[in-house]
Structures are given as structure tokens and as C-alpha cells.
Length: 357
Image (cartoon, rainbow, N blue to C red; front, side, top):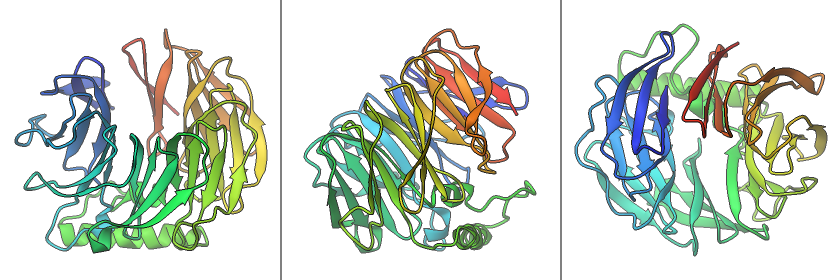
């Protein structure tokens, strides 16, 4: 597991022994985002010092110099999915920044291949989709769709939100996250094998979800969310209303059937992933909810909040399953491991907590 912090470092942890393996030192300001490459061979970190660094997870060494080019903070990182990588190549990295641009990096030669410009304000999130498209959400209230098969040409601008776009999620997120890995724990021997396996996994999960179409949901400071089919239309499929304050985080369930949203109105809402219709509200937090994460089997959700707790919710009964106190202050981030065994959380109390399920 890798974490980034306000002490200008990132850390790699061994989840089995709960001990730090390596401290990644090199940034000159807070580390705002961390991301594993889809083959697990590189860690990327983005910082408030306007740079990105690439690291070897086994040794904790920085791979060459920092990636420079952005003129403001790095807000988000997203790797090219394994099944889209050109044979013989390594995955590329997309970075978004407060400077309004997205940059595409060659992770081997560590050079910027091209810059995607068009947003007129900070880019808050970037996601590399499973069909060769890149999606970005911005404080300019738009979401842009870029075609990575033609040098990152902007092919769609989605304008419906009335305020900042905070976050976006794809119905294919889980398939992209799994990549070439599976339950056996055996890693593919070659990169060709990894690509083949990743494509099989991707197609299998998409097929099981009953749709090869990549749907997207966006969350905004305007209290709303929109559901899109970005390849088909510039018009949203649904406008999802009900939250009383800004929506900070959204996530499609691994099977694409549901969407969950976390809001500063202290609630979590569950929606239908196909048509965006409202299903249920989970209440229990007594302060802003920052993030939510799904269990791989889609049965449970975990949320983290300003109220210092994590809460696990049962999707079927729509009730609180477990309350997880333990942090001494606000809990900013939470993630659930793909094997379902662990939840990890990070908070203002400088602690990373690992919870076993």
C-alpha cells in the first residue's frame, strides 16, 4: 500500500506486517496524490511542489528526476490501462493540475508526450478509460473527453454542471483497477501476457455487467451529479439531485449496477447505475462525508468522514453494518483492497489505519 502525506513524503507499507517498508523522499511540498501503475511496477506521486515523481516500489528509489512542466499543484494521477498499452511499451501516465492542463507522460523516458489544454480553470480529476478515452473534470464546470488514439484530441465537452466538478467515476473503474491480476496471486510472466490477461479481465467484467459501454458519473459543488454516456451524447442521461450540499466523491459499484455518492450534507446516497434514479440514503455520519469505497462483491460500502469515523454499510439492507471509530481527527481518504480483505484509511491525525474484514 502507498500513502502520500503533508510531510512531503510518500510511504510504502507492508499490509501483512503493518510496517513501513520505504519512505519516498524527494518532493518539496505536500504529496497530494499517489497511484500504482497497472502492472504494479511503478508508483507515481503528485505534489503541491508542481512536480510528479516515479518510484520503484521494491527499493523505494526515485526513478530519475522529477517530471516537471506543470506550473501549479498536481491534483490527480491516472495510468493508461494495461490492456491499451502498445505491445513492448509501458503504461503512460496522465496528470491533472491546478494550472488547468493535463499532461501525458512517457513513464520510461520520463518526458511529457503532450499537453491537453482547453480547461479554463483548475482540473480536479482525470481518469483514463478502458476504450482509449481520457476524461477530465474541472473547476470551469465542464467535463472534457479526450481521444488518446489521436494524440489527445478533445472530442467532447460536457457542460451541465453549475459549479466546480469535484470528482468523476467510470462504470469500468473496477475492471481497469483489476488489470492483469486475479485471485490466484500469480503475476503474468511477460508484459504481453499481462496485456492479454488485462484485456480478458476487462472484457469479462464488462460483459458480466451486461454492457461494454463506458458510463460516467460526475459530482459537483452544485449539489448534483450527472450520469453520462460520453461516447454517445453531450446530453446527460440523468440529473441526480437530492444532496443538500456539495458532492465530494462518487463511485460506481464494481458490477456497474449502482452509484454511491458522498456529500458534505453528512449523507451517502445510493443510485441506479443504469438510469441514475435515486434508491436510498445512508444516514449516520454527523459531519461531512469525504469518500466512499465499495467491497469487490458489491455487498458493502465503507465511508470516511470529518466526524473521525469510518462506517460500513450493507447495500442490501441499506443499513449501517459496522461503526469503525479509531481515528482521532477527520478521516480524509478510504480504500478497499480488491481481494476484499482490508480497508485502509488516512486522516488528519497523521495515522494510516488498516482494518481487516
